[in-house]
Image (tube, rainbow, N blue to C red; front, top):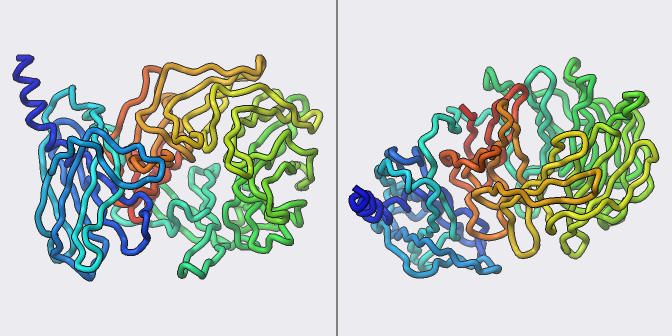
Length: 489
């Protein structure tokens, strides 16, 4: 029986890699011409029939020869050149159809040994002018056959996409506010958006609401206890920065007046005075557009008085840091980078009572682009991120009282930078999208992290690498892609 299982496993080894292909749209080394894509159109778990799609992005030249190859050994080149280490297997070859596509169907055996198996793949399409156009290396791990999955919506109701610098904020009634970002008319023309929409996940509808007072890009939004949403940073008119407030009752934005600085890629963290319960929002870190430097000068929004004031400087300037609030009126800030992209491994603490920042120990390793969430009154969970060498797939627990951190035994299946975990009703964490710091990252592969470890889900059906996942009030999540929109079912 064991021999039979091994024989079946090895006989399907090469074929299974076809099923592991979901996107090769990692950033191209040369933007002209566009690279081909490969992704799973459906399926993706053991025991399922899956459909794999190869797409030529040059629609003007269909019926071109293509080749799909795989290996279990990626090239860890820091320059991101697409390459696989031998042995490399040819999975399929032929000509694309008139639409520049090739579709494959295959069945994954119901073998537990296949779950989590890693594969790395590339596709190549021949051009008469450019020769063979080779995709970047991407990875996939076969998922178990679970009922939970992302289901594609018939249409994409939201006029936003990953990486456009917009803000998403859950409203008290379960809807989601989208606002700002930028639109690219061409490589030299950018529109700073001031429009806003509210998405209803129950009705799957998107309704336009009033515009923001100014266009904003890479700004932040924070819902307050009264249901309004503070929006600040990323001003188009960065020489005269302001803050504003969205009121879901009037569906309109109101200006809060000028603020001391214009910050991009900053953080907004709600924190309360533990004695008076007065609510504040700490806006810290990021890039100061007024001085063209990283910012050490945070802001504090007073919810009761609707004022934004400057604070004493942080311990050090930080970009791509993480922040989380504790019930005692404190905000823990960890990691990030300096202006030279040197990655920090230290932490600092903001105390609301003193309005000061203090050095607060170190993390287990250097991290930027990581996520952090409060676990209890003194502990914070730090998830993934990376350093200059690449992405991390580990976790650590920061003890705010002892100012120390410890590595946890659980690990993610993939490194993830700039990924926002979504807490599900059972307490587990959903992670998808993000970056890895290398060219072998599978951005559309979701996973669920729990005490027992990480479990893979089927891939999100998005042919491009960019995916962002957003949690919904009361549980659930949606995945926003460049071309598709999905709900977790």
